[in-house]
Picture 1 (cartoon, protein in one colour):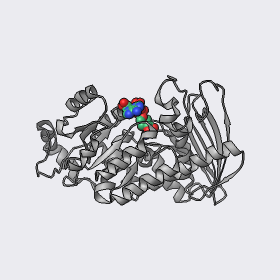
Picture 2 (cartoon, helix red, strand yellow):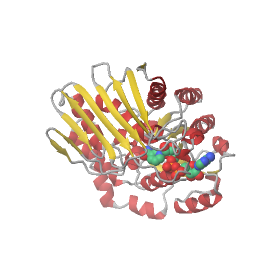
Picture 3 (cartoon, rainbow, N blue to C red):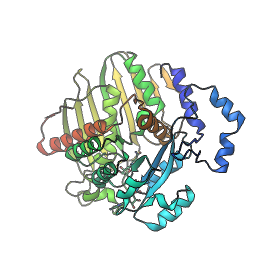
Picture 4 (cartoon, rainbow, N blue to C red):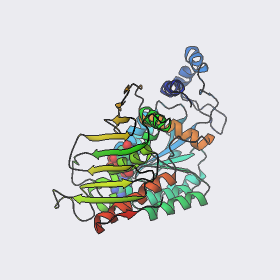
Length: 390
Ligand code: NAD
């Protein structure tokens, strides 16, 4: 993926979304409608003109675990994937299984609940499980997925602290399966272009990053407001975007962190549930990041990178899109593609073809963010600067 032209072309290809299957029984696995679409000569000709299109590329067969609001978004986005397909479902709610299995043509034999999903080990129709449940459940679920011999894709935050993240990484390594984290922005066109421009020296030496990540939390009874399920407050949920963004926008790993917390509603944001945290990260090249994570303000989704020659601004920066980005030279105009469609096609290539992501999405990447979150909470408590060794 060299030039901007190549990159745009690849994105256009991703948008085409022709699902081809390569099931172990040798059948295409396509429905008659899909077959008709796949055999459309116009589509085939258009596809043949592209670099990346390979009708024989293996298809990643994914079981979705936790059929909530984000899983719904992922499932819809996957309908446009050409390298990944939903072949399994895991839920504790039988009525959801009934509804989803019809909607996505998933056979009964590929449907599980939270008690019996270890049986995935006997199911050759599933390559990977995408864990999309409350944060504090990720560790145990990923470890069970690994023990069943399946690759794990885990939503962010990968776990609720670095110790858990280490255990997950070790379990996946032991089981010889891969662990990926649902960092959809790592495949987003504007984001990757800014990273490319920074690497090409367009902004000069990166010196400052500002990340603003927040929204007003609604229902106080949701799992996000229960520490035993969320592991924390806004930082775990939305502040992590500024942490992760500071790292990929500056292009270095931070070496220290300081942080301060404020609460406007201590009755709602009880001990361990952060409402607003401002934090600062120091980088080895001399850059600093100043970030805000909050559950008490809307319209906070902005990244700003300044170097000694130029700047990049993204606003919105990590929402579902379209992302808007500009540099000191003008606006970037990338076509919007549903983030989760690109993410799942790219993850298929990573898991099945050994492709390397430009910005990693592996367990190590998830673990780095967890180490920073641990350090931010420690800095809030102690009021001191906490060194980081990532
Ligand atoms: P949600 O509440 O809409 O869905 C959670 C699902 O988990 C539900 O189907 C629920 O039934 C199930 N579940 C299983 N065990 C549960 C338990 N013990 N308690 C509560 N629910 C249980 O939440 P969501 O917004 O879909 O978030 C799920 C995960 O996805 C979180 O880790 C979140 O951080 C992540 N997420 C990521 C993005 C992104 O853009 N990458 C966006 C939203 C959410």
